[in-house]
Image 1: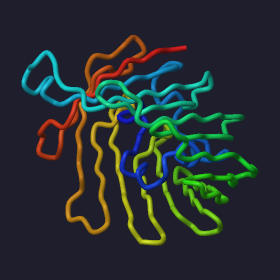
Image 2: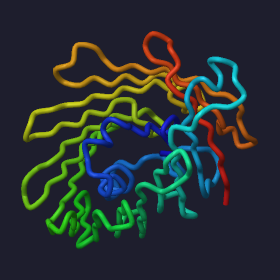
Image 3: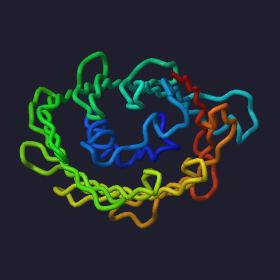
Image 4: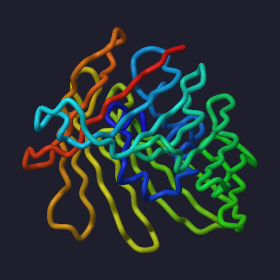
Length: 257
């Protein structure tokens, strides 16, 4: 989302979990691990819109290019992401999510797609290190429990539904709280995805490596940043693959409180 290149927005491990639970597991789980507020950006960010462009915009030195897709996120005054939307190249909303936070904890979240509600969660109870939710998805209601524990900069999150563990995540952070290694395991299949991030001095990811169990090579991308605003946040990012071939260009517009 808006923090895809700055606060360790981890695309591969996000896919492992249902979208509606992401704001719970990785944004506000108890008083344990918490991603940097305002998407990890400088200043009090209110809204961010990102255009994902084909790399020809700069690789071929063209003035215009096709938009692949767009996304946008909104933050409350405390820095928590309260809404997000994924849009097609014409700006039509494909999926969207809304969340409500109280005292740093997500108490309600809903995901919509195609004009209908796809999933929702509601907080049932909150204890130190443990959050219990009522989750409704595809007409099915389950009890979702998120348990977190931390040891230094290593944070472990275990998600279960109706008593059955569905995901185990371990996040290691640097001294500023940015994820440098994320390991996500599906205990049922044994599938494991590991992502490692390298940041520049401004906490922007400049190298991301993703390894998947069973695959011979890691997926590696490099990112360069250009055109910074008055807060020091980038407005354009260019990504390359391991062979230094262009992958895409991100252009973003940031609004502040």
